[in-house]
Image (cartoon, rainbow, N blue to C red; front, side, top):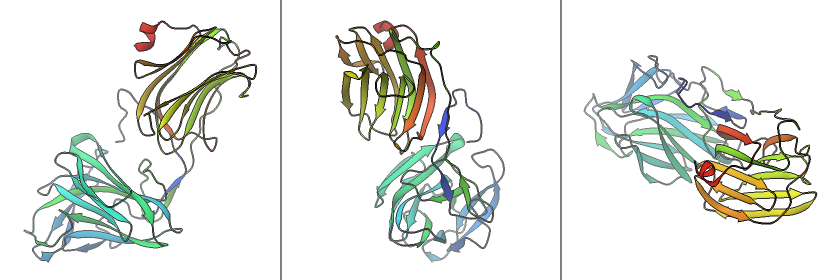
Length: 332
């Protein structure tokens, strides 16, 4: 929300473009209001007075704000808006011919959805970021934000909800908000490089630890010999499982998977290695043990990569211990 928290994370994201050119100026003619108007001067999620209130009029019909948007073609999309309850507590986000979802801003829930996926994320001061994701049907579409469930009703002229920061992007999962003011804005892909040398890592024993959340990309975290596959300790993330791989002088010592751990989960993972003593811990539980095998040699580098060589993740902590920890320490 623009404020550094007590436990910040390193956020690495793919390239993305906000296709909405006036993401905050809902009073601009860019946004079409039907059965509604907007009022400025309300506190936004970032703490300034840039939020608006979407207010229904007294007509009988739908009460909404909308915008036609040109995209690069059919494919994945994510549409998100920051919202806060007012007199109305329910809203409907919709993308023409591509799906929508109704959200409960009182209890932080989505009530029904026709999109591929829906998400509601809490922010400070009763704000939520509501997101729908799916597949676009053409190179042009219209995005909608309705009061209540999107159906017809007679408004009272004063009720509404608070709105801020709309974003439409060609990603299957919403990335962090990109503000715009008159044109589309692109964020470049983010990477993090250079970590460790042979003096840091112990080839005889150690623990690789991560407090991490994969976003929309598979990732691998490992200690290796110059990023080779011949000698390495590797933690891997697939769409529904974690993997623990140890290779010593081109011989596979450990190659095990643990199902039930998919992307977008916050995970604390510890991979222990020692001669004839290998273990894998997830969120305080030991899930893999291997009691025979040699450790890798010549470990000298740490790498965090994704399927396309860039990992798109939230990382709260990466740790390396140059000795094998006890079970009690690993559980902690």
